[in-house]
Image (tube, rainbow, N blue to C red):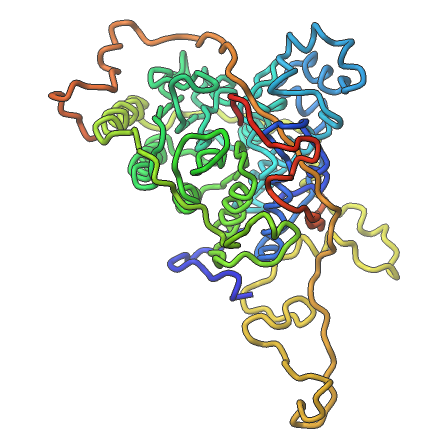
Length: 545
């Protein structure tokens, strides 16, 4: 397997990684022509498995979130609405659809509630396993739906799995840091924790006539949460170099000042170059550098998905970042997999930046960075939190004893599939049944050649592969369109506006400042023909997650 990945140099501490995937996620479809396609998650999973990353981490199929768990953040009425509406009865809920913003960007489709439950369940169980020190990094690429509000769908998002995951982390952790590198502002998460100092939200996003219209530099939180919401507004076309120059100093300062005990990183890939809805210019490695940098702080880390609408690039980036989390760098040659045709004509694991202009001038970035760092300094250190007894929740039983029924399995039956998937192969471990041929160990003797065996002994072929192929994949889509945004809770004093001007005159000198999953994705033909119901995959001006 060394030909498919190599250990990352200089990384001396192996992370315990839990990876959540539910094969059912590939069976949902937002509708014809919709840019959001859950198939991208199955494409990513196919790369993860065929690169052999299942040997470096535990794989789980999380228990879908229940209505009760969703109502930890969302209103009871909204969750009930999501649970009962279907394409066949949606005409009976016209008033409710308008009330909850369900319709265009957030359509009603078959299995809507189940889709939301899978997404939220993975993030909640990942957070629960982190809190109980069962892993160091938890990954749920089906999560990261950061636009959903308490009683409103928005931007292709219905249930905010990020908020639910953070609430689970807050049961055990005093302070949680949320970082958002999606091209769109993480408005739903910011709004949920806008008045508290127990969660700091940091969002790097395109701002200015762009969905969702929030995320201004002056939006820093209110009451106890003042200065605990940070926004770094960007212009079109930011490059890897400039993104690194703003991301690393800001996050380093946040880590030193806020000192969170857990981190949630939303890895929306619509900030990659060439995204159908995005307008930034990051390469795959520029995007992955954010994951690598946040990982270097050795905090419990929850990695989530998010936006991303060019499926072949989304799956490339998330697979590569899964490898980084597991401590390996994937080889550039994409292995044969169920979606191999998508990655032509070069079949390389890379997303390159384009030659588009970077409208973020050095003066603009330096001035915004100075203001953001000043907001961080005003915190004055990590806030103290009075901890209480940890409340009991239904998810506790699932995480604490996933094998409670194991003794009931008859001893003559073969081991459950989940036991194989939840294991991780230790470095240096050799198992002929699983990895014959890795590292040049394959026996090349042929039974067809009489003299191929010098010793004259018999050679027996050994089985390879421990995962069964899954079902054929389908495609999906969804997307937010620019709609009216709720007014911000509070604004900074008018007198502070001049200090927040980020466009100085030329003479102004800027200051530098569950149960395991075994499914593998099915096959499809070509990225342009993914949506069987939509001959041409056009996206109208809208938003995304």
